[in-house]
Image (cartoon, rainbow, N blue to C red):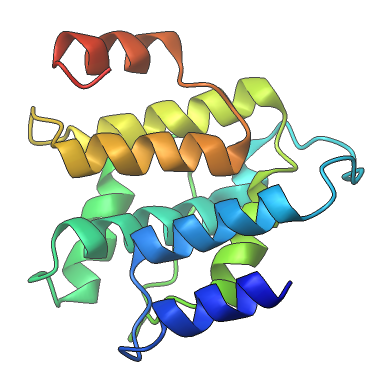
Length: 168
């Protein structure tokens, strides 16, 4: 685990963790930890992980739109893009600081979701990323990394869209 602490120091040398750096860390941690660890009973209802999904989308949006400093506006934009199944309001943060611990906790919870619901999460993220009718190479890379962190394959529609755009 010395490698993980060195990786964390490297990512935090500028005193700020980017979403991409956090995803790389989570993936390395998952690879280095025991893959046979048993999780709790699978979660089927996405409303039980809505806060984790919201934070994931917020972190991605901040990474993709670094000049968007208005968290209220960014949070409302995300909330407007979430499907009706996420029928509750989200607490709009006054400040958002991405940490490895927070990202780890979110992925621990999101990894308890059953595969079919993970596919729904990935479809939600895909629709959010292509809200401007375009999927950038960075958005495609983030989506692939999130798939790896969720231990879920790309949904067929997403994979087809990435391939059609030349990114698959």
